[in-house]
Image (cartoon, rainbow over all chains, first blue to last red):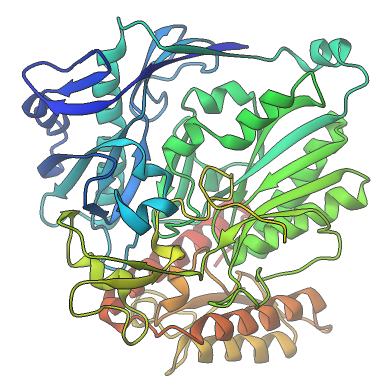
Length: 428
Length: 126
């Protein structure tokens, strides 16, 4: 499969009469976008706003972030199986409005966190303070059940990304990145001496606000499955969860999965990248055993030498992470884990909910309990009341002048377990 | 009846019949589960949620199974670790009572998903 990601660098978003890109400025016809999204009768009202890097703007509570794109060659525009007709993804050419993002805000339940600060201290922690964000605040019709509400907000974000992405159809890109990997047999023939490496990406798959989708299939309903890395880069994987703000993998991060991109960068040099296994994180222990056995079996069948596993969330998924690790290490497959830590305010507590002696190579995405102090914003997009939820949890977290203290847990993408963020490790 | 739901969630109590209702906290539910696992009952669903935020929920529903002759050491390890982690995470934080109704709703929905998974994936009657 060969996929060209053609980046059109976006330097600003403005509202205007036509939706277009000119000289790096994305202009959006707000009314047209709202009308398009309101085709969905479940939507009562949509507010559209822009948040730019450096502005004293806070966006809360964020549900998902999506990169606007258009497929100009090859099958499957948009998100097949979800918002468009089914098609095979992974091949062709995609024009990307690089630097722009669609951010959906939707108060599906009152305790949702998920903040993006576009300036100051908060901006340091979220990758989406650097993107020009077109923010959709979606109010559903009254009486909508929570499942339909969640689906409505999810679909609106994806459709908006398609609508806005079309503006890039006839624009020349600033850079073109090519991703090509052939069949296992072809690549192994090309690189017979390089170690074969698979990437296992775990997805929260547990029910309302805790779901993920692959070509529109709820990952709760699947056995672990093998994807060509290009399929994920081309939009096959969609986020459906919004309670694990710091370590949820947004749709944007699936479209730009750092582990996939880094493995691609090493493909043919230090390793032979064999693909991506998507593994659901289920709630039942039998389900966890099934997933973990099946994942290890796929790795063994493909005959890999090494596996990188990334987790999503914290708590019961820690068990899956370590069970897969045990099975692989015991089968002689070297395994690296990427997770984040929940190691208390001082960083000294045990970081995961589970342990295993086989977990000898672990990369941390940061401590979710680390406390950050965020000054008040000039403007809040979304639900200002949600800020109290964000700061809540202990006495003195919300000061009189509006300054709040919260754990990184509340900040979108702050401790990304696929490494799409700013936390890093320093050696002393 | 192969499964029993141990819960302090009033919504789950209303919706399901096979419920062991705990008049108490999330932690009390975990402690009840620990006692049952030590008595030999299978732990069917994981005691913890999948995110930090769900740890601040006032409510939790966990599924246990049938009683066995022998105690499952893996199940013991999971419930003991879960209790340790729950306590660790609640040291600096309070239970989020402001959104109690929403937590009850989500806990109940996640419980339904778990039960559906048991019914469809393993073809076992609930």
